[in-house]
Amino acid sequence: MTREDTNGNTTVLAIRQGSLRGTTDGGVTAFRGVPFAAPPVGRMRFRPPAAHPGWPGVRDATRPGPSVPQGPGRLAPVMGARIPDGDEDGCLTLNVWTPAPGGRPPRPVLLWFHGGGFASGSGGWDWYDGSRLAAAGDIVVVTANYRIGPLGYLHLPEAGADNLGARDQAAALHWVRDTIGAFGGDPDRITVGGQSAGAYSALALAADPATGPLIHRLILQSGPWSLPPQPPEDAARAAGRFLALLGIERDEHLAKSLRDVPVGDLLDTYGRVAAELARPGDAAPPMYPVLGGSGYPAGLPEAVSAGALAGKGVLVGSTTHEATAFLGPDAPAELVEAVTRAAFGEGVDTLARECAAHGTPAHVYRFGRASTAVPGLGAPHCSDLPFAFDRLDAYATAPMLGPVDDRDRALARAFSGALAAFTATGDPGWPAHRPGVEPYVHRIGGH
Image 1 (cartoon, rainbow, N blue to C red):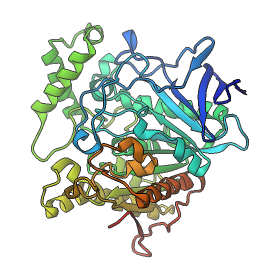
Image 2: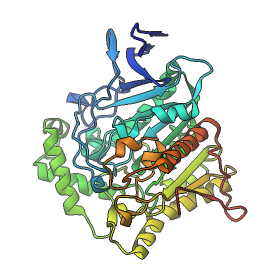
Image 3: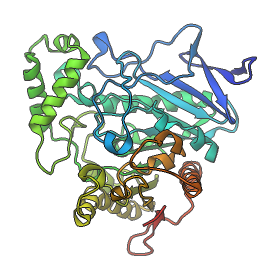
Image 4: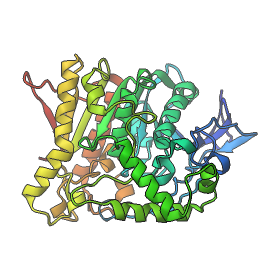
């Protein structure tokens, strides 16, 4: 049930866990900082997500919850820096934007996961405000946090730490399936999307037999497709070094010892492990989803080749100069092209080819709007995000964007409209890609 408060711009909505007070602006109601799992603190640190017990009265859902504690993002020089807002207590939250809470008929849903190399980011940041995206296609938009860095991907199965970030993502998906109807969403029409690590995670959710049946369509933006899930032996090596630096024994007290470490020390130690294990030319983080662990029963290419995406609509793409975000604006063009192709482009081609082979051709795009602040960046990794959410204002200081004009604002409306239309209908407004028959890559914002 819903009811409008007397001031006209807030809405109270009842869901299974309790009542929420959200805000309405421009015909879209936002409910921010909504728990989808219990806080991962105390005995729940380094444990799988548990159901939230609910709350009495009306919960304030006018502000996002805290991010998962994290170190500085590696792409801050491209995207801009964030003020730290991390807190383990209350970090497993999501945010919902809906044109009509509780309305009928139910609307298609987009559940979207942020990127950040499995080590940074937050679904609650204004970069990913879903209000304009929801309005663009009359859809319900959800962004969600998940545990990252050592809190999400430290691999210690004997202590309960097994792809916890992936488990959080699965918990968010199940929460959406079970609860989104109260927000006016259709649980049978859930598109899961994301960018970079978020795209990788979305594909994993679709490929996993435990969660794949809940997903109707996929939006995959700039996924690091050349990165295989972490081999268990590499994950064990990183975990062993992490424990050694903390001075923790791998014994019957392991779980308690980890719970007692201040989160700042966990993050500092993660940074030391990352530095020690770094190898030239290898951009893989020291801790990320582990093959054979929860949510990753098989490699992603193998699962896709076996038909895991059959019957699901897929929208997949990349930016023209992905690699400048990592190599810098002065990197030689030939190197940028080669790394962009190897790390991102070849995977897009493979996904498109496999989707077509299994009877559901994908829609493919390449985003090319170049930075107007640092021309050498071109269209780097993440440069499509301000346009995908039509939130140019939230990236005002981002070097990857720079000054904008009316053409950029029109491009933002067009790209966000395409993502919303795909969520709603399966058609972003351009032909599907059929390799060898009628290949088509839609170019957005340049070449």
